[in-house]
Image (cartoon, rainbow, N blue to C red; front, side, top):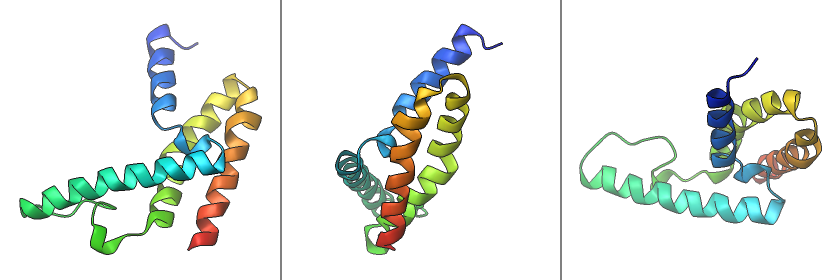
Length: 108
């Protein structure tokens, strides 16, 4: 049995990482927005002579790899878990997620 607090936290997390579950053009637009944000962080890390964070270095850009890693490590596991409780997530979120992952694979 899930507590209200745990369920609330889970729903907030799912909404925060949900961009790859959106229709392809929207998901891609947001991927580029996030990449731009990451590059700004990488520029600041470079300026401060800090160790480079993964996917933050504009000189070593690989958006398809970043998206696939994010989907595999974060998005798919949490949405799979949520689908166990809310079956509509399968059609409305996981199917678009698989299509977007296939798109990024084809870009590699």
